[in-house]
Every structure is written in C-alpha cells, then in structure tokens.
Length: 312
Ligand code: AHR
Image (cartoon, rainbow, N blue to C red; front, top):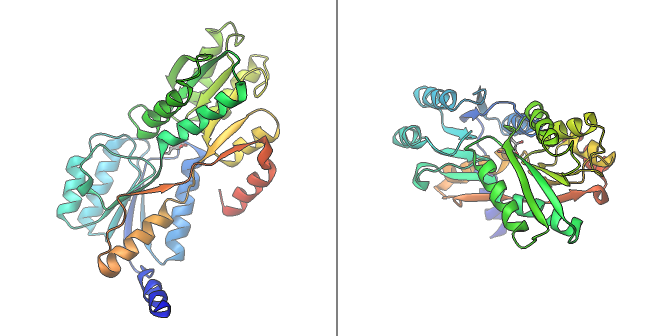
C-alpha cells in the first residue's frame, strides 16, 4: 500500500555515509559556480561525504581525479565532462571497479553501459528555444546574428549551435554571419564580441548576438556598450543559463531573453543513486531537466531575487 511505498521510498532516499567523488570542470561561469554550490548543499543535506575535484577546464585533470576516486574506493562518481570525447578508458575502469558513474550537465561520446545515468538538459532544445525566441521577436525583419559558442568539443556548444540553426532554418530573414568560441567565459565573450563589432561596421551590421551561455552574453553586453551601442535595443541579446546577472541585464533592458538551465543536477543524480543502491533500480539513461524561456515579461527582478535566495 501507500504507507509501505512511502516508507520504502524514505529508506531508498537514505544515502548518508556514502562517499561520492565529484569531478567538476572548473569555474568558468556563474552557472558552473552555482552547480558546485548546489551539489555541496545537496550532499550535506543527505549526509554524503563529497570529495570535490576542480579540473580547471582540463580533461586530463578530470581523468586523474576519476582515477584517484577509483583508487580510494568511493561509492560513486559524479562527473561533468568538459568535452564529449576521450572518456571510454576511464569510464571502463570505473565500471570494472563496480563504481557507478553519473554524468552531470554535459554528455559524452561513449557507450551508454559505461555510466549509470546522465542528468542534463536537452541542449538541442535549449538552442531551439533561443532561436525560436529570435524568430518570433524579429517577426520577419532581416537579422544578422553573431554567435558566441561554448567550449569547443563540449556537448552544450555542439548541441546549442545545432538547435539554434534548426529553429532559424525556416526563417530566410535570419542569418548567422559570424560564429566563434568564447569558451563559456565572460572575458572571452567580451573579447570575441569586440572582434565581431570591428568586422561588422562597428556593430551596424549586427542585429543580435546569440551566446551559448549568459556569462559570454554579459561580456558581449560590455563590448556593445564600449562600442557606443545599446545592448538589448541596437543589438538584441539572447543566451542560456538564467543566472542572476542576466536577470540584472534583462531588468535594465540590456539583454532580451535567456533559457533556464537548473544548477541542481546533483539532486536527481543522488535520487537515482539512492534507488539504485536500495534495490538495484536502473534509472532512465537520460534524466532531462527543463528548458524554460525568460524575458523582460517574466519578472526579472523576482527571478534574480529567487536565485540569490537559493544560494547562486
Ligand atoms: O554544461 C553547461 C554549461 O557549462 C553552462 O551552460 C555554462 O554556463 C557552463 O559553462
């Protein structure tokens, strides 16, 4: 009955005392920092002993950290894979050691049996949502878009590009005129946007910037202002993540739209591990988080406050 289901559910949630290694990419963005702090909070609430390793954007550091976790005999490993390729060997080593691995927020090009589950957004959908916003917003007017891509070889960069292109495919008025990586950072977003502006008649030929994350958008906004233009008006700004700083920009009219990526990937990951340890329940291979669009119509100040309260 329900009571039994609830009590076994409660037992299934108990993962206190487990030792879980987390190989984090680094701290390239506000979103990444939020994911780190939410993961720590989630671990603390559940009594998990979280071993945290910051890879400073380098895959080789992630592989070393994972090998270290395997050597220590942790109960599980969380990894946010910086790029898609090159994981087969280390994942096979974890599998051999019977340590379940959960991927967080980015995917890998590796056989699915090498990890327990992947908790991430549908990154193609994120790109589509951003692109569809632009299609609707320009309503048939000509629009040249410059694109700030995420880290080369990462699934969010590959998929957000693809999704956006799909959304604008039917709109012959919208064209991507320049596209380069800004590595998901504010500093590189600004630098690349400066170069885009210089090669586009000081921005006169640019209608919109599509950034694969909010931090690059915030950098681009600064570059647009430095060029004497108004971000949000002269050049529209659409990006992904929904971190507090983009809501500040949206509230000020300097950014137009963002697609939310929850920083709480660890919650579903721990739930999946809890069920797996309780009775061997195999989770869905892909646990997909929501991709909600926010604009100035969605109470940006309230959204900013809500995230600050959550500990972003
Ligand atoms: O993998 C998720 C992406 O990584 C976020 O959108 C970006 O901000 C981060 O660097």
